Amino acid sequence: MSENKKITIAHGDGVGPEIMAETLKILEAAGARLEYDEIKVGEELYLSGHATGIDDAAWASMRETGVLLKGPITTPFGGGYKSLNVTIRKTLGLFANVRPAVAYHPFVQTNFPSMDIVIVRENEEDLYAGIEHRQTANTYQCLKLLTRPGSERICRFAFEYAKANNRKKVTCMIKDNIMKFADGMFYEIFQEIAKDYPDIEADRMIVDIGAARVGARPLDYDVIVTPNLYGDIISDIAAEVTGSVGLGGSSNIGIDFGMFEAIHGSAPDIAGQGIANPSGLILGAVQMLVHIGQGDIAETVHNAWLKTLEDGIHTGDIYRDDISKKRVGTTEFGDAVVANLGEKPSQFKAVSYPTEESKRISISDATLSTSSKELIGVDIFINSIDLNGAQLGDKISALGLPLDIVSVASRGVMVYPNAQPEKYATDHYVVRFEGENVSSHDVVKLQSLILDADLDIIKTENLYNFDGERAYSKAQGQG
Image (cartoon, rainbow, N blue to C red):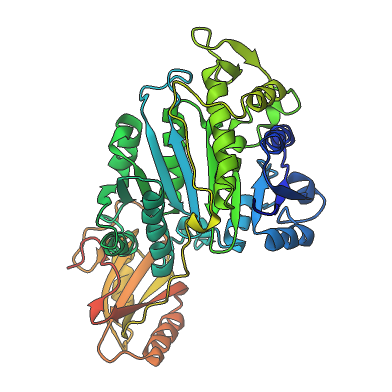
C-alpha cells in the first residue's frame, strides 16, 4: 500500500465549497490515501487586493504538492481582473487540458447514446496568450502564438493518452487552409509524431466542419487534439451534446504539476441552496487519483458514481420524470455515491484503471529547433487617416528608399499597387518592403525616412526566410 499523497485543495467560490465537501467525503469513504493542504483562491483574494486572485502561500502549497483539486472560481467583473484558471495553467506549465465527453444514456438525455470522445486541448498558447493591443482609433490586434515545442508536447500527449487508454484514433483539428504557417506547423508536427504510433489511426479535420460534426456526428471521433481556442469551443460543444456540461470533469497536466476540476463555472445564482450537482468535480477527482497512482480508488469511486446514476438518484439538473427515481440535493447525492462504494454498474460498462503512478502519461520538455534565418524585408504598420492605401503607397515610394516597396495592404488585402480601392474607410495599413542583402540598419533607415515624412508608424514586423523558404504570408491579391 502506497503512502499518503499530500495534495492542495481549493474549495472555490459559488457552489464550489458545497461540491468540494461531497467530493472529499466520497474520497475519504473510498479510502483515498491523501492528505490535504487547503488554500484560499478566487473571489475573496481578488477583492482583498490580490489582483491575480492567489497569494504566495497558495503558490507555495501547489509547488510543494504538485497536485491541485480545485472548485470553480468566480472572477469579479470589471477592474481588469485576469482569469485565475489561465494564470495557474500558465504559471505551472499545465500544457494539456483533457476533457472527456461521455454520454450516460438513458439517464441523461442525448441524441448519441454511445458517445465517448476525449478532447486534448493545448493549454498555454494560441490566442489565449492574451497579447492584445489597440493600434489605432479603429483597429485592435490579438496575437495568435503557436510554438513548435508547445505543439510537439500536446500532439505527443494526445497519442500517449490514446495509447494508455486503448483509444484507436487521434484527430487533429486545425484551420491550416487559412493560417498556413501557425496551424500548418501544428499539423506538420502532428503528422511527424503520428509516425511513432503506427497502431493508432491519425486523421485531420478543418475545425469549422470538425466542430459541426462533433455536434452532429460525434461517433466519428475518439481523441481530438487541437490548439487552445478551438479546444475550448469544441470541448463545450461535446459536453453539451452528451446532455450535461455539469457532468464534465477536467484535468490540466504539465511536466511537474496537475490541476483537476469540473468544467462548469461557480454558478453563484444557486450557491448555498444545496442543489448543485457535484458530479463534475467527482469525475475531476477520479482523473486526479489516476494521475497520482491511486487507480484502485479511482475505479471504486467512478463505478460507485455510475451505479448511483443508474439507480436513478439524480440532482435537479438531470432529473427526468420518465427515468429518474429520486430527486436529491448535493449532500444526498454524495451520500448515495458513498453507499454504492464497492458496487459496480450493471447497465454502464464498469471502469478499470491502472494502479501504478509509473503508468501515468509522462511527457518530457520538447527541444528548441534551429534554422538558418535570413532577413529579407519588413512590414511597417502605419496609422493613416488622411491618405488611403494608394496615396500612402505613392507617397512612400517617392522617399528614396533603401528597400523596394512591394505592397500596401488593408486588413490583409492588397490595395497598392494595381489593386481595387478600399471598399470602406480604414486607418490601418501594412506597407511591405523587400530587398537583397537586407540589414537591420536598412530597416532602421527606412523607418527614419517614413517618420520624417510625418507618417505614424505603429508597429514593425521583420520578414525572414528560414532555411531558404519564405516564412510570412502574402497579402490577398499579392502575386
